[in-house]
Length: 68
Image 1 (spheres, one colour):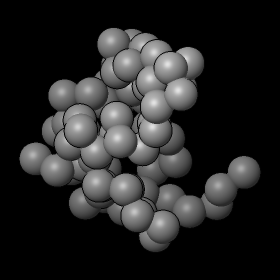
Image 2 (cartoon, helix red, strand yellow; image 1 turned 120 degrees about the vertical axis):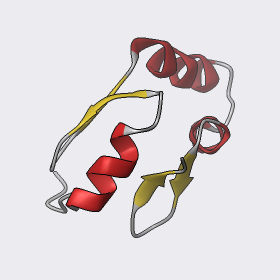
Image 3 (cartoon, helix red, strand yellow; image 1 turned 45 degrees about the horizontal axis):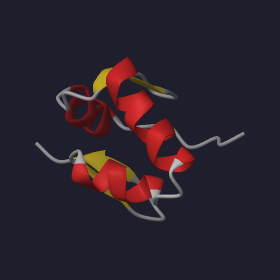
């Protein structure tokens, strides 16, 4: 299990993404519609990272932050 924590700034940014229900120091809770999009992409053999990027998330090896 990851031990990295989201900074207060990252939490604020992520909480402003319409696909995020809630972000805490240790977890992101996604809205059901977005979670279903990711599951559908996986089921169809699509790249789930692309779904995140297409929905306002910046994915990198060091952190993930939502674009506002």
